[in-house]
Every structure is written in C-alpha cells, then in structure tokens.
Length: 66
Image (spheres, rainbow, N blue to C red):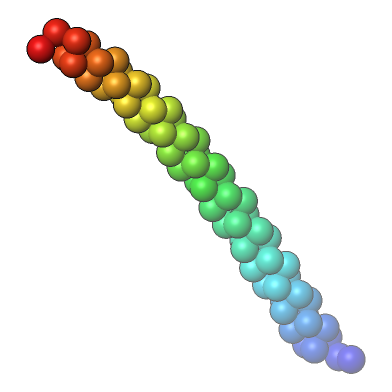
C-alpha cells in the first residue's frame, strides 16, 4: 500500500471511531434524559396519589357534614 492509501485508511478509521464515540455519547445522553423524565413522572404520580388521598378525605368530611 502506498502512503496515500494508508492515509486514506487511517482517516476512514478515525472518522469511524469518532462517529461511534459520538453515537455512544448520544445514546448515553438520551438515556440520562429518559431517566430524568422517568423520575419526574414518578414524582408527578406521587403528587397525584397524595392529591387523590386528600380529595378522598375531603369527600368523606363533606359526606359527614352536609
């Protein structure tokens, strides 16, 4: 292989490695975002459950006093 061919192969390998690393980083970032969204959804669900419990208590109070 001549020098030009070796440089072409080296550049191709470097581009492939860079693209693979970028793809891997993007997947990691996406997974981190998914985890954050999941945590926020869980917190929202907990808040909804708490609100429902409060509404249940209020409903029982109203039934007894109205």
